[in-house]
Image (cartoon, rainbow, N blue to C red; front, side, top):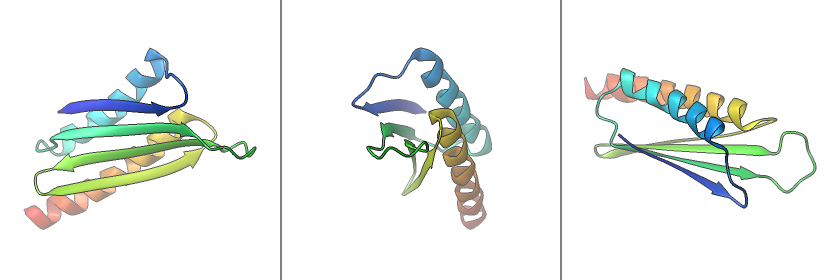
Length: 97
């Protein structure tokens, strides 16, 4: 599976990228046909404490799944987005099987 992290207007440290990669990699254990994944990390401009946004997109053969979450930290946002994608993958597996 190809894995790409894109950050908007900042540079993510390796620890954050490794954390997100580990979370997304768990999706591959559920479903082997994941072609690639893209993660977008950005800061919302408002002064709210929950201004970290993580968008996760995974490509499957003939399908694309997407989740977007906004939280206090990138780790929390990525974790919640991957959880949402896990549910979507389970539904996709049920349709395909």
